[in-house]
Amino acid sequence: MVSYNYPAPKGGASLMLSFRPQTVLILGSNTIAAARAFAALESEADVIVLSKGGAQVACEELQYRAQEGEITLLDLSTLPRSSSSSDAAALDAYITNSRHQISLICVTDTVLGSDESLRRSKESAQEIYGVCQARNIPVNITDMPELCDFSFASTHRFNDPCTSEPTPLQIAVTTNGQGCRLAGRIRRDIVASLPKGVGCAVKKMGLLRGLAKALDVPAETEDDVEQELNEETVISTPNRPVPQRQTNTVENEAEAARRRMKWVAQVSEYWPIDRLANMTDEDMSTLLHGGEDMRVPTTSGVSNTPLAVGSSRSRHALCMCPLPTARKGRILLVGSGPGHPSLLTVATHAALTKHADLVLSDKLVPAAVLSLIPMHVEVRIARKFPGNAEGAQIEMMEAAVEAAKRGLTVVRLKQGDPTVYGRAGEEVLYFRAHGFEPLVVPGVSSALAGPTLAGIPVTQRGVAESFIVCTGVGRQGTQVMLPGYERGRTLLILMGVARLPQVLKALTNVEATDSREGPAYPPSLPIAVIERASMPDQRSICSTLDGIAAALESAGEQRPPGMIVVGWSVLALCGEGNVDVLDRGAALDDETRVKRWLAGNSWRISEGLDSGWEALL
Image (cartoon, rainbow, N blue to C red; front, top):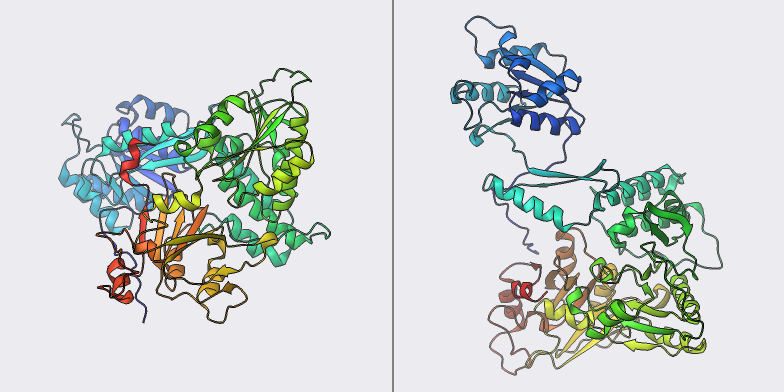
């Protein structure tokens, strides 16, 4: 029986919800009550404020909102009650006779530091808490955490920087009562670190998803469409393979609908935030009906005219000066490294910041790298959406040649190293055939950087004497022939996470001779899936070949791009080290070695970069 190391729940956290109450009832009329009322109004709830003295003693904001009809402000003292009954009894009677369905109750007149004559006693608060418990209404009583069913996080709602109108995006930070003021500081730091247009990006994606849902969808694909669009309840798998589009056939409605939904998901996953924020209605229509055109941002948003291949306008609406016709253009094939800007080579940085007139970028190059490109330089992103890789490749090569013919310096920007599954070879031959000898600028390959950043050496004395790099998918999505098992070799697989079940079968199935050249791999052999190598949200998931599928599923949402490392090097530098794998008469057998590495569990998951990198990145 296989034992899985599902995490044991540890108390002290909160169940974070995005909640829309029907009616919020607030006791008290101070500024805290006003803040609670405003938050409830923004969630489109009805708000009732009960205060001793009513509007006469309420803060100015509550008086204003009552006059505007936004809230109902009542005098708690005038509610029906017997002469000796308490506020709790009056509240209970009010709830019983109210036509409103009370969802939440907030008691704010218990705040510390307020006028003692107006502050509610703990005994009264306890009575109110009892009423709420009896009626199963969640309650928050200020400054009395033991009488709270829920707490308020430190929140921020993003506005449109152009119109100042609120957007759908909100973030919330909670310290679960351990540092409320610090939560506010952390929230401010998060807000400051995000692009100004992030709220607009969410708004535009909402519009895009709405348009996608509104399109006529064949009945047989309705479930697929709903699953692709239901981002909050379905684990996102943006790298799930999509059949290659055939140029000589016409897609039926069902095929087009599935591809359209995948495009929407990948736009959300890969496009820079500012690009999403500046989508126009025409952009969305073009995207949903079979493709994507780059648009030129203007001072008022984004132009409605697709950017022609020959245009010299930049992505920031600054016109470039005409270049002398005598100037000969050139093409640079440049590697951007694994992702983090600090891992760019000096040559790549110079190409992007000093020499480029036009940057043609692959979609996986992160926004942090693209942001280094000067404002006056035009940037286009490859349309490598599912099934469109071949067409996008040709389109980018044609654009590079056309721009070079006009005398521009074109930087063809690729993830990692251009020659490691970056199609550099075919681009070199294409450009050469069209009169341009491109300069290939190497980049740090994720095949080497990814394992290193995850603490895995691709070679290690006593463990791995060699390594081999291969792809998990062949041309046009075909199956590839993987190498057979060698104890002293590390296997690195790029572009294979989306096809992990097929990869595992090819490696371990003794009879899989059509997909593996050589001996099968032991099911207990260590394997690691490394996602978003070099980025702050890097994650490595380590297990054995027979346990990695469950480990990856348990880890939740995938974080593309990812790579696979197979071999004994995965555990070589863990803890005290394990570097005698190749030694004859080693102290440990393989089974004991793996159990010690996994500490009795079925997998290990590591989040983020090593803390020592913070001073360097």
